[in-house]
Image (cartoon, protein in one colour):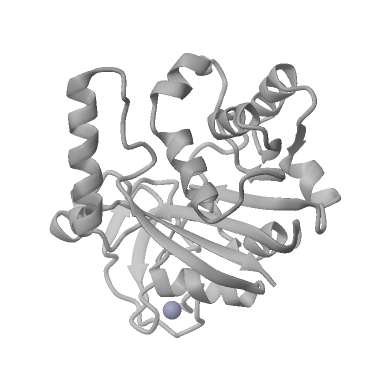
Length: 265
Ligand SMILES: [Zn+2]
């Protein structure tokens, strides 16, 4: 079987890990960890994954570190304003926070419920279904394009990141964040690692991500290790202490996610 990242021919062997139809293998040439495409069946099929979902309130978004942390990182790289497209915006928390901070926001989602939710909340935003995005992909229209926890789900990850890069103006910022299989938690207890789940079909190394950025004409500007999707809440003192511990752990190898930033040439 060929490695979906570098094409290296991989001898059939037992998978590293198997969760239902997601059988993970590691490429000895490029270290990309991937699900065997021949066996994998998307667990949700055509179901809308936000059916019956309780959307977050603004207060939850403000006291949780996810959206503020993401925006802080982007601002640290000088992107203080402009049009921001979040591909796979999910609950929309990052874009709601970005809107509050003055960015002109938009996003792409496979879930029709999520698109409808954001159209209701922020009607001036540019919200697109994945189908609409694919039918007429924006070109050179955004100063920031982000893919937070998206590429680990996408079988054809190369066209996905290329479309994201094409939506950027020259000099625009591309942000990719994914779970990181080479973190210490996964090394210590791979079978128990919480992000080895049946819908995660790709795990990129830092070098894999750097190669993808080069391929889509983006110059790498920063790399960060994060605890994961969510470092935690700042609501109480105890939670703030926990948060500080998690942030320190992320810096010494326990960061379960990796975020890569680059400028479109
Ligand atoms: Zn490979």
